[in-house]
Length: 290
Image (cartoon, rainbow, N blue to C red):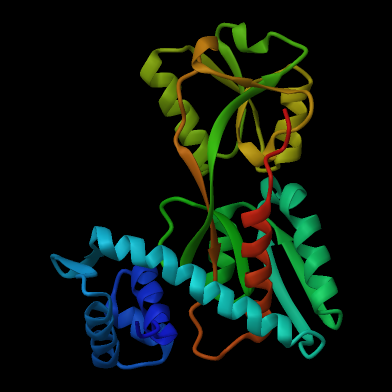
């Protein structure tokens, strides 16, 4: 058995994330023909077809999807390994953005681990809604962003998937009120859109009582018994009650959390090291107790 070529696997990940051989070639600093040859050799190596043509684009076959899962893990492990052995050598500043929905739950572990591994590195953190973070990535104001992955496209890697849940106060019966009072994000928020669409499907009267891009403010309204909201599993706080179909609340779509980076040609070792740490932390993250 010959070993898999990690450069080929890295190109496979780039194709899957960009949806294009051309854009993938730019990301991995190769020509399109070189990337195409890599994929041909990879298919020969595993003895299966990886891609199926879909109009002008490409899509992965079932075997390609399975290989992609392994490819991501192998590439991530290599990145993490190199970062760990470079401990103490990396210095400088890296800029990380994430919504405050995730900051409270994710940041303590991420920053603690990263500071231990790279004591000479400085991390600048920006907490803003996903749409604003995507714009900052596009303008080069951030090196990494943890975002809610939805309609956004481009250099986004899904790093965690969680259930999106209806939540109310454990000490109040706000969820039984008609019309249902809601605390939600701004109109651009994908969770808000999912919540309103679900209520419309079941014909549940509702009114939006509180609007904020701050999960702290939304959570305060929920805990005070003033409104019901939607949150991913890891954002649950003590005192919140999960509202199920038995309570009259329809199921919601899953919440995909993504890691987004700018498309730039030069290597960014410090950002790579932080990205590896984020993946590890979110992989090992438990769910907050109700």
